[in-house]
Image (cartoon, rainbow, N blue to C red; front, side, top):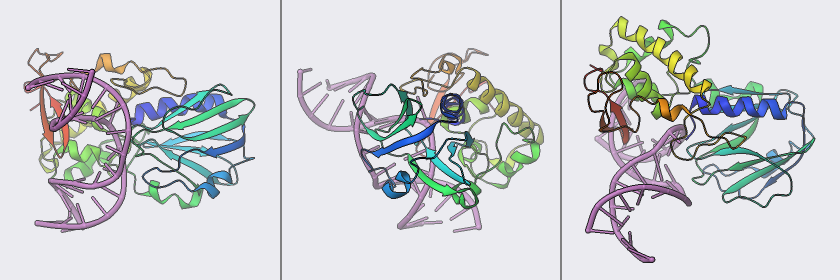
Length: 269
DNA sequence: ATATGCACCTGTGTGC
DNA sequence: TGCACACAGGTGCATA
């Protein structure tokens, strides 16, 4: 479900609400995630204080002191929800964290593709392979030039977290529309001008999506239970057969690598 | 080494 | 109403 803009929206909400709060209890209600939850390490968070909430790609990084990070990835259907105390459990509730002062953070994940662990800052292997952050001021032509080192379709390459961190299927499609590049174009054949347009489109699309607090086309909600509004601004994603907002041509959908690509046949060459 | 396909799960929407 | 099937925001491993 969540890509960079959704994860960033959640990060901002949780940072505002949880920075300085102390973990009073952490309770595993159903540890059967794809990678089973490790109860002892999670329970060792008790008594720790949240120093801040960071993000790298689609990973949330809670600073819990002494160089330790609580790392959460939401997978396809993961949600972190702040709720009042003494509310009944939610369906698919896996973890419940009680904070002092009063706040309860619940991890809900119907499909169980998310993951959660605790690691020292120096040992964040999962993060080491990640490509550049697209909203880093240093993100530039050089950051995307590796798209060219692959014969894969450029959309598949955009989804590769080792090349650029944080882009998923919605924003890969939206970025390529804004850049005027067809998703099936091979990376090696991209021209310099197209790479430059991809750099600009990546920043613009992600920033606008964050401003709109993410995309809720089905069930995404942020940590306050609010939907995003970027779905009304989508140019191509989930718009098969509808008119292109720029030229009016019917948007096309093609399955590629098991996932849907959407594009305007006239605007994207 | 690199690229593809499928497995991992549950929920929802569609068409019969 | 019920059933079967396609499909969904992501990754990770086996296979070509």
